[in-house]
Length: 357
Ligand code: ADP
Ligand code: MG
Ligand code: MG
Image (cartoon, rainbow, N blue to C red; front, side, top):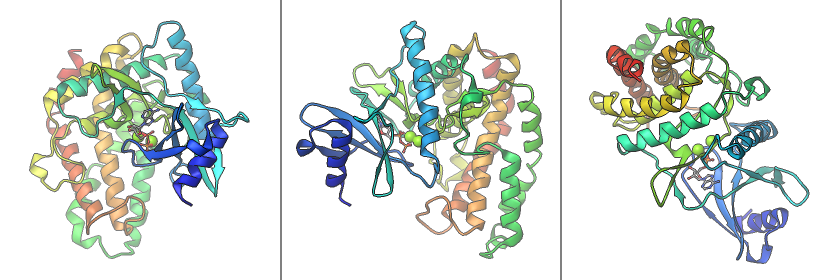
């Protein structure tokens, strides 16, 4: 079905003039299909949800709306100043629309904003991490247990290791021998799962964002300040260490996630310092001592866990992550292991940075 026909149907549902409706792509998300829907008077963001990644769109919307409502109450009290991503209802009061077996939702458009795909400098790292910190702090008194587990076991490293072991035992594509060194390198670090389990007993359950990449926040076009934390699809009960760790994973390396220039894959200390400062500062009144101590573990776990998932997918014949060249997942796995190794190497220095905040 052509997008023009979808645009008209969505326009009907959301009260736009369907004869005038136009739809064009916006942003560069990787999961959903995100478009701007407009008539001559109104503009909104519409997204076709990726139901392979999110088999239960209703749960996703319930989570995001519960957070949206909590943040809205905080904003009214003057306790939250970023813009809030808001779901729009159809004329009949629904938050999801089925069109030809595809699921769409609409969000209020946050104008005068832009997103970045790569952290360019310290200032951007600070601004983005600070926005995620403000978001986390505003959810300090939100009962995380009320959120659905939209992707069960998302950060369960022990389970990710089990999945890896099963795929390795089968080695259906005969790829294990050629990358036995990479496999061994990961295997030597499996004690990390136990360390994580122990640490998780010491820290509170939080409503986490779970996708703290820089392209999930909007900057203001006027001031370059933070405008909004967006993409609440993966908000789930979890621990802040994962949100911190994913920022380290996605902000700190000067190389792309699939770069084979491994000698350059490392944690840039100045970017790390900026992100730690930005994230922790809004949390000063809400973060526990054990939680702050757990952040460095998050910085290790996130590149390790995603690296292991890339390696698992390589052995499994590249079923999950889209690949664009031979050994793409293996390259990503090596890259993430190099980043993990850099965190280990610089652990004392990075820890000192966190403690000094
Ligand atoms: P995905 O889950 O696919 O990553 P996102 O929700 O992050 O999708 O949206 C993709 C991109 O679309 C964002 O990075 C941003 O540039 C843009 N975007 C999404 N929602 C809005 C909005 N409400 N207002 C303005 N831009 C938005
Ligand atoms: Mg996104
Ligand atoms: Mg998303």
